[in-house]
Length: 248
Image 1 (cartoon, helix red, strand yellow):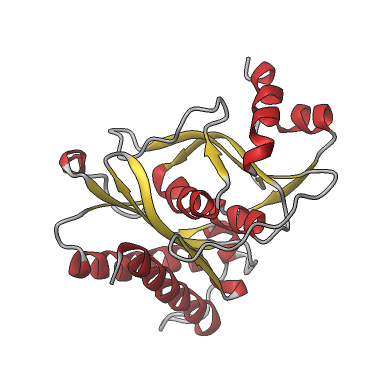
Image 2 (cartoon, helix red, strand yellow):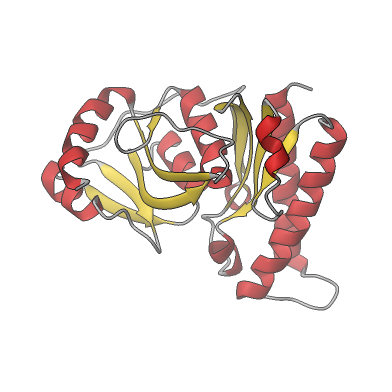
C-alpha cells in the first residue's frame, strides 16, 4: 500500500468509527457536545495510532491527541494526524468536521488524505479532483470561531464575501468541490490541522502557502502553522498583494 493509499484508508476508516459513535453512542449511553467530541477524539486517535505503528513502524507520528515527542525531529518521515478536526462541529452534529492523515518528508508535505465522513467524501493525494472555475464574487472561507484578522478588510478591498466554516479539512474540500474559492486563516493552527489539507490542495493544483507567500514547513520543534492561504494558482499573486498591506 502506498503512503497516499494508506492515508486514504486510515482517514476513511477513522471517519466510519466517528460516524458509528455519533449514531449509536458509547456503551455508557448517547452523548452530544463536548462529551461526544472527547469520545470521538479518543477512539479515532487510538485507531489511527495503532494502525500507523503497525503499517509504518519506522516512521514518526505527530498527533493532536498525543504528547509531542521531540524524537520525531530526527526522523525524515513524520505522519501528521488530526483524528477529529472540528471537534466542536462534530459534537454539534454538523457536517463540517474531518479526519486528517498526512505524511511530511524532510519538512515538506508529501502525501495525505482528508475525509469528511458526514458527506461521504475522502480526497487523497493519489486521486485529486479536477478544479472547478471560481465564482464571482469570490467566496473566502474563514474559521467559525477565529476568522482571520485581515479577512473583513480583504473582502471589502477585493469585493469578496466571507463564509464561516469549521475544520480546516472541510474548508479545503469545499474549495476543491467549487463551493468556495479561497481558504484564509490567521492565528496559530497546528501542523496536524494544516498538513492533510495542504497535501490534498497541493496535489489538486491549488496554491498553498502562508499569507506572506512563504512555504509551509512541517516537523518543527513547535509544530505550529501561523497562517495559511489556499486558492487557485492564478489568483494567488493578487490575493497576496492585497493581503500584504493588511498584515501590519
